[in-house]
Length: 434
Image (tube, rainbow, N blue to C red):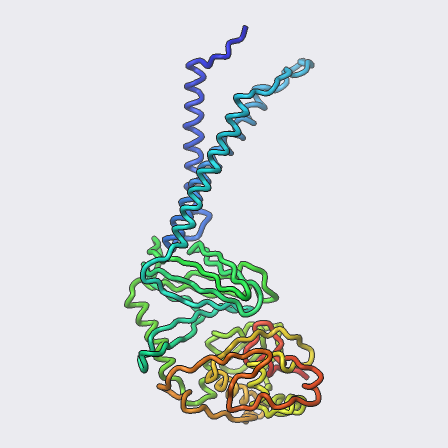
């Protein structure tokens, strides 16, 4: 009669196999740096450690299953001349309990560890740097705020196409989208968070010094949610400075640009568009000495001043400046022929809007501006910060222009924006249409 007792030799064999499986799983888990980007945040280190634990367990199970499979193929192979049936083996209750209980325990352990990491990376940190993130087809923009040095009761804000911070400073991102769903993904920081219309989503991370990095270090930001034709080009950068002083130097330089903008509205408007803080460049075509845009979903902007003063003015009953202004704040008020209502409400501040209109007016075949725009005193250098107009499809923001003038002709029968492009810019409406 066969004995069911486990002998010393079997116990030793099981121990050796168990140790080998754990060592094998550990070696597999150490391959994480080979497949992951550099760990550039404290959260990345926690997430990667959790991944290594899961990979160790998964690697050990993989080696066990594959090892048993290889052993069974060799040990129980059919011998030459053996034509008999295999043995009739019934279930083993003990074995079934074991291979059910062990995975259950593993799942519970991983669940507890995962929850612990999640609560840790989402917890509020002291002295967080709050940065607003806006996604729009096909562009990321970051808004920074600080007390206004001219009036401490007010806040000064500026936009950048890069997310700047420094090592050791906790960052809290407040993310919004101006059109469709986007997904904010920074592989080096292990950030991946959907940005959903009508909601504000948050994510936190703390940059850390990464081995082998040269500072300031730059890490790519990508959109991980298919959002349109230029989705693959929706890329920005996280810039991590090594010290707070380095970051402050950059920050003060950006504040100085807000405090001392160019006096000429045309120069100011060109600079705003060149900065790419608004997604105009992702949708429109524009070829000048300083701006080279190759968008493929919105109207071309070359010659938009001529069109604004000619066929667009005739179709809408607005002056060239009024038409361009309306195209920025009410992109669905008139549509350029051949384009649909894809441009979002960008809510560009009043002084910036006027400056952009002034620049667009200069885009004519003759080089002579089709219209001129004068900035009010509150838009001058050293002026207090301006408010962002609450532009909606139903209402027009306050302005010295008169975009509320009744449309006529083509505009009356086709109420949509000329700049129908998805991430269009203020000039989206002033687009190149026949």
